Length: 299
Image 1 (cartoon, rainbow, N blue to C red):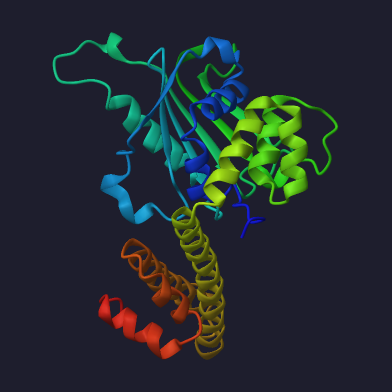
Image 2 (spheres, rainbow, N blue to C red):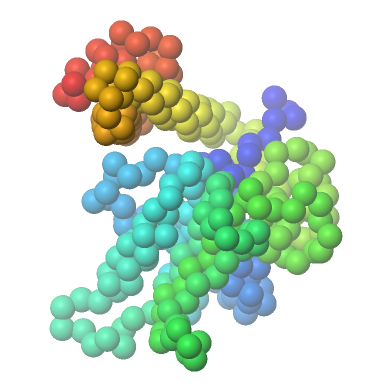
């Protein structure tokens, strides 16, 4: 028990680490290229952006942060591949932005909104860079239209295996992706704010209740990934059978999509209702899976 450490990239652990203000200041200064002393205070806000779209919540756990200059920052971790991540990020940041104004107010009420996405998959196939920053700018002159919306993306699978440079952003990205104590020890020595994050990680890792919540979350993510894999396999097999029978490629794709859609909806319902044991059981019990599909009206 004493040697157990949570993985920071598991969204539950990341949010708990970000509850420490010193950690928030260190992380944000590295990502936003600010001096830590210029960040006088941060405030964690309750997440409300996704209440209308709770069914899309799998893999995402937000840390909303308000800086002392009223800049709003939405930090997200996504653990499973989502090819439409750019569209989702724009959608939620736009909601954050428009949510600042009330009827009758002038447009000068708008404050800067920033999205920081930490992805455990490769989003951009055309670059090996692990970090990307986007603004709204003119195509030829590169003139920024407005600095009120900003996107920062960290792709963890693209991190270099060895630390050939010690910039703070890379150190933070390596910390989030790390799983071994010796790596945490090394990174904590290189950056005092990461040292604070490591201390926070050690504290929450020894909290029995938090560990139960963490393990439930990790299990749910693992089961979800397995279910998606098996659903895709079943869909492909069904598609192949229909393709052989009908001699059409359309049958294969239709069967795959239909199967995946049903299983995805079932997984989301089970996760929303915290039926983690049922989610795990469906991976090995086809009859039980069919029972749940019928229970939720998915057949």
